[in-house]
Image (cartoon, rainbow, N blue to C red; front, top):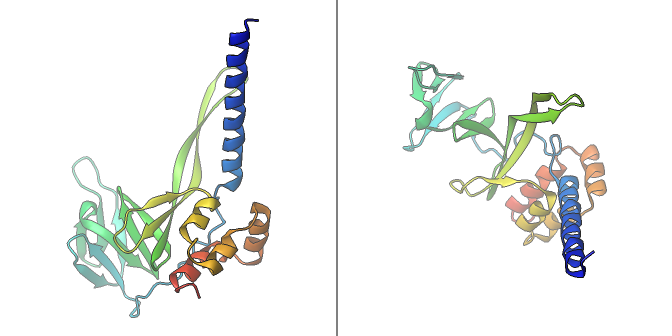
Length: 209
């Protein structure tokens, strides 16, 4: 084998090896369904009334919030009591103690409210597999997505790994100590307290108390 070719081959194999190791590490560190509690924490809607919030700042209070999917000629809309609004005009709605923020036509459930807002969204993803006979099979699976938002009007940023949580709360020693654990330790802590990961953000939002 040509020495130069052999050297390049080893270099390529080494790169592939490290990429595989990195991908495996990311999968282990990935935040999965059930690791955050989906029960909201930190909402401050003191009168507990339901409402629809529009992008122009208008807040319409009422009793019952509902949504309907549009058709070819009718747009998606959000309704509160007898008031109906086009989806594109709706920033968020509050229903039964849960604040739901609209983003790209979908609503994201706020589960922690404060300086850092935490949102959850359960979406449907398509998984493609190739069977032994060569047939291609597509199936839909539910997947949890988590997003963090800095303040009330910041952009939603996808939160993928537990290392990203550490980076977000690094300035708060108490919150960082909860996040700076092995995956095994965190899984054990979540079994003992389903709000464990949520509480990292709650402590951060509460001025590190």
